Image (tube, rainbow, N blue to C red; front, side, top):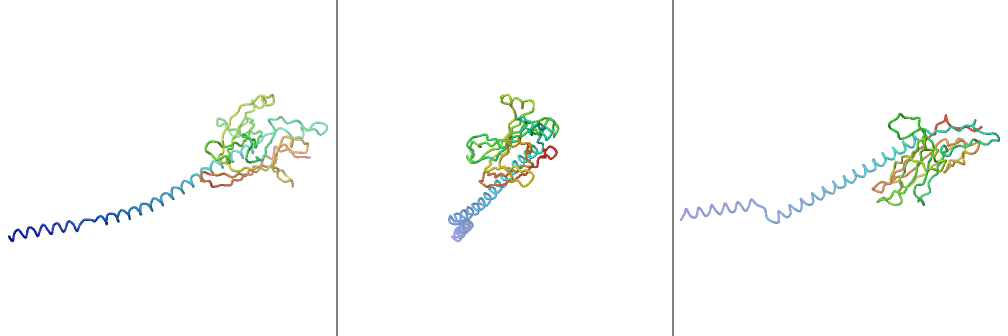
Length: 258
């Protein structure tokens, strides 16, 4: 009898010890709730960091692309080419006629655009996108910058900037009514605003447009002294970024008025 009671006592102690070392359902639920709160907080922090990184990366990418496009435009303007000068004037103070493909013209676009493919700059230059040759090259191009509606899933108020170049052998076809070929490339996207200012020497205020008619006067330079570009980009996070460029055209080729 005494041995039987001892066995029952040992079994009771063992059972009590196993119950004491476990977790109740309430404890498990509290632990899961705390773990959920901690994980939720960690995910919120992670999501915030990733959104910030994506925003910074998108902004850096947009700004990098825009700076490359402005650098391309600056190189084009720095290599503007013209053969007209003061000695080309004819009797009666009539200036020599400049071929259409050699004129410098441009205009600050009126936004929103009524028509697509609006030309904002067109001029002759020796700066071409020909990577097989040396830079600066000896080939003459007519470069045309146009502003276009972005299209696709891009908001309607945003535009793209395209650059088209036509090499010299095909330029004269334009004077015969033949549509010349050329290479077209999109150089900038998501443009919200863009303005141009054409600057000349002296006290004259900058102009919003420069037309071939400006070059018909015997006292007028065939192209401005500098072009100022101001634009605002809008990234995918709807943040805006302002960029500016002032390109000074070559002095040695500028016609000086008498």
